[in-house]
Image (cartoon, rainbow, N blue to C red; front, side, top):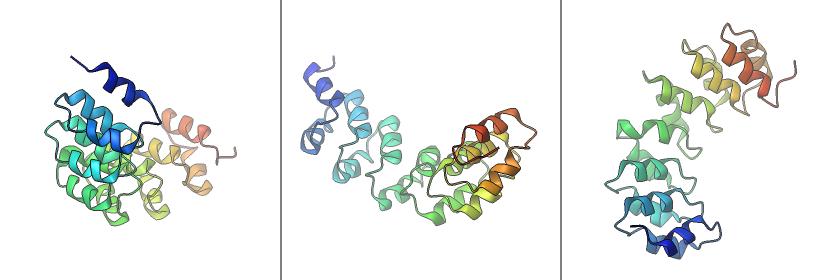
Length: 171
């Protein structure tokens, strides 16, 4: 059973990092997942949670903005975590470039929407054979207008719709 006091703390955006740290040791994996997802969770707590036995906890750690770069590097060694690490803006650029060349289109899509992905890499991903990857490039706020213009002519409707929704695109 879930402790209602803990649940209330986890739903409060003002909950302190100290309280979240205490909750991070709860035996209930649902509580630990919510701690890993909370915006106030400290880097120190995320480091500890990166070794959690529950994969969902680790996924939230991998995408959390407070997760230290070295932990992202460590988590990326687990192929099940690549999608989550690839979407984190704190992931090192050299890793993003490596992930973008990988086989998994979901990981490439995650790189394509990452605001830290270099423009040159976005250009290459805009030519990806997978329409979901191209649509992800079209959704990225940092995709240059020239690339958006090219993607606006894409054969895939989802790609064209993503371009139309990008605030940088001027038709």
